[in-house]
Length: 246
Image (cartoon, rainbow, N blue to C red; front, side, top):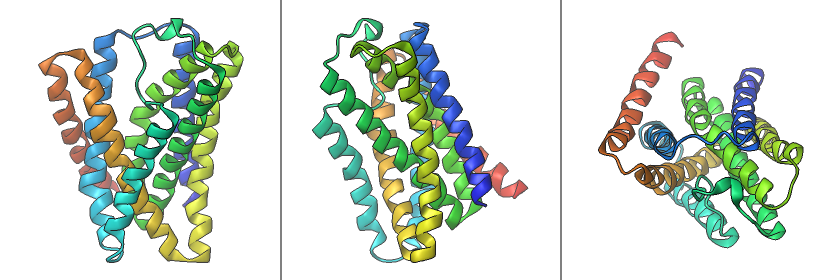
């Protein structure tokens, strides 16, 4: 099971690197296309949290709702204390002049975020392989924007193109580390693996409802609003397919 989870993690790493390459090559998608992608992935991530991750966590004990709330607050505090918005970027992203300290803070914030993504995949896979696959799909959808944003910020703070690409690749690496940790922690105490799933559920609620969906509104189109709903529908269909084939 761990090998399968790591295989999924490698795919998210590829998505990070692809997003970083788009930033380094200065081939920025249109604002409306980016907003549409954020809306669709936001709906999918939020559906993963509300329809699968939270319900699964609540079956694991009476303390789990508190850990879900802690997961939400964890990502919120990371953003506030580092002053980094994990999936947003100004219109003139390629012409940013970012202080070196801000660039490093951004990289740390993204690393913590992607570590949580990996924990979510690993903990989900332990709880239920179907859930793990669905969480992987949710992570995969927002890793290209994450890779794009961090590489653009690194370039703006004076890093070379190769260094910016390495920053994007580091997000994929830390995701793999995050996947392994729940399997290791479960050997110490299975309860902690349940806690990790609850924390990840809260973080997914934040990423979907507080980051991705509001950012999609930058496209200023009602069609993009419908894409958020479509994200929910795609997740529901995906969950039924995964349930059927596994």
